[in-house]
Image 1 (cartoon, rainbow, N blue to C red):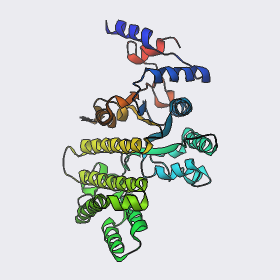
Image 2 (cartoon, one colour):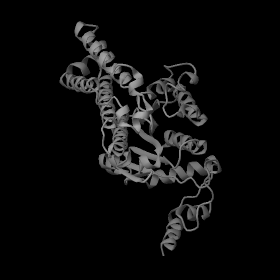
Image 3 (cartoon, rainbow, N blue to C red):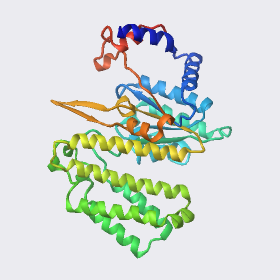
Image 4 (tube, rainbow, N blue to C red):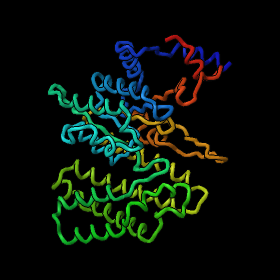
Length: 368
């Protein structure tokens, strides 16, 4: 009964296509036409990391969305603060060589994937064309964390301190605050210790210094809020909003480290949930940055983009938390749409033909 219903659904709703440009473009146009016209954020999920094919398809989809459907930015599952370097390359104001942003502009090693190089270089070329009225932006929307690694908070905090210094000048108060924060940060190696993911005693997130650093960060956020009219008028609204968001990223990153330092059976699932909440906040900010310019394509693993609960089997434990997509559905409502993908067959990852009766098998058997 279920398979008959699926067969009928596929027969009536499927949009077959090939990778031939005309076929693919037609399919993209039909999919966009089927979406709610209010959509400003389109999620596109991948079933596993590391494959180039899905990234190439992503690139083609993004190009069509830019050229025909009013998209001005792409955001990928890579560190938000690191992506600034890649966006500078895209805008033409950054390094002359992609190699200079391959590591600095991406997390998770994603800069080494050829399809990501292709994406950045196509965007740079598009922006360099005088006929391109709206210049494209490249973002990462992941938190500054990975599965077994977390960035130091130094980069995001220094961004905020540099911003305030650009407004106030290098006064005694700014120097004193920078010195206090530097003394609390300590060595980067403590923050970046991969052992902290599985062993709370290896984390620095609840040391007296880290706790005081969280207070300093809250005071930074409070000052930015209190001085909003002055700062926005002096340095510009866009720069102000960027500084506020970086300060909030620092807050969330410090909260993440504090969670890892807890001796609690829930620490891993709390960390996973916090990471996805950070992703959602980053995408909310990115959409706000693009307002009046265009729409945003967000690309990440299916588990981050989905509206329902995410699950991960870690040994004997089934971990469940709310992913970024669930938060985005609450934030944007019908203005958020998501397309998930199935991997089909991947010999390189030991994934063979899908089992008979599964959704993947039924889709694979459909024409086109």
